[in-house]
Length: 279
Image (cartoon, rainbow, N blue to C red; front, side, top):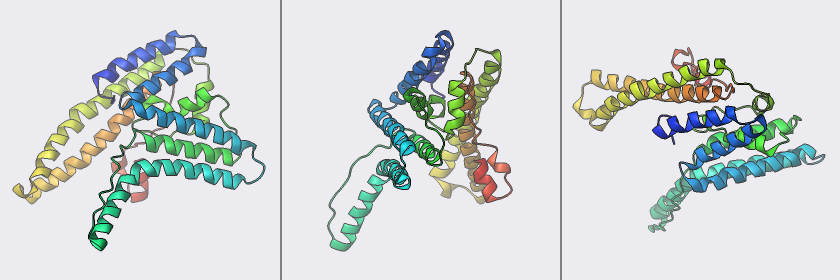
C-alpha cells in the first residue's frame, strides 16, 4: 500500500474515524494495529521481522537502562544486532554475487550461490530509530515504559515509507498527550496530503515519462535534449520525495501528530553540506 494508491485513500479516512471515535485508552493500540496492517499490506511475512526487532530493542533498552557495569558493551551489542539485521537484508545478495564473481575469476568455477533475499519495507527507517533509541538510553535518558508506545514509535504508518527518523522523546510526548479532535488538525493535514498527491501524480509521474523516453535511447537526442532529460530527472526525484514527505506529514497531522520536516527544499542549498541537511 503506497500513499498514492486507492487503498491508502480508503484506509486513511477509516483509521482517522476509528481513532477519534474510540475512547482514548483504545486509540494507540488501534493505531498500532492499523500500522501493522499497513506494513503487512506489502508482504505479510515481514510482520515477523518488525515485531521481533521491536521486542528485542524494547527489552534490550531495559537491560541497558538497568546495567551498572559493561554498559558500553551492552550498548555496542545492541547496535551490532540492529546493524547485522539491516546488513543481512541489504547486502547478503551483493556479498554472494561478489563471492561468485571472485570464485569464477580465480578458480574458474561459479558456485552459483544465491539467496533471493527481498529487502523488507522501511527496514532502514525503523532500524535507525531503534539505534537512536538505544543511544539515548545509553546517554541516560529513560526508556519508554509501555511496549505499545514503543511499538507504535517504530511502526507509525505515516513515517514507514519515507521517514523521517523520529526522535523517541519527542514522539513519546505526543503519544502520552491527551488529544481532543480539532479542526486545526484537518486544516493543516488535508492540504498537505492534497499538495503531496498533486506533486506525485501530476508532476513526478509525468516527468518520469519524459525521463524514461530520454534514458531509453539517449543516442537519439542532442546535447540540449539530454540536458533537459537530466534536469527533468532531478525534478522528478525532488517531487517524488517531496510528495511522500507532504503526505506523511499531512497523514500524521490528522491524528494530531507533528513529525519533523525531513525534505526542506534541498535545491536551494548553497553548498553540499546544506544540501544533504535539507534532503
